[in-house]
Amino acid sequence: MKASEIRNLSAAELDAKLAELKDELFKLRFQQAVNQLDNPMRIKAVKKDIARIKTIQTDIELHGTNA
Image 1 (cartoon, rainbow, N blue to C red):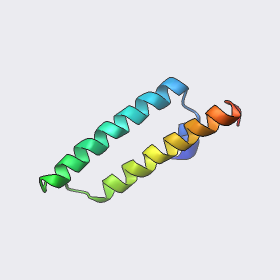
Image 2: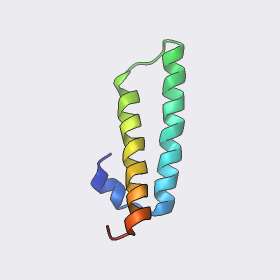
Image 3: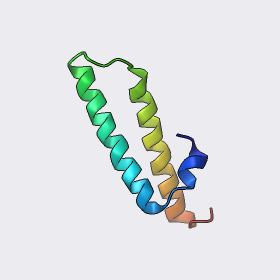
């Protein structure tokens, strides 16, 4: 997910997407622990998406919605 796509989401949608990604990360880590993970690079991608969402949430919190 690109940062421009994330910036177009509302605060509630950001929270929902963040919860969804955290759940996905948990499931991926579990799959990795039992050696059933097909694409290990997906963990890295999900972590980056979580970081993007958190960064944009902080930016909105500090600078307002039009930043």
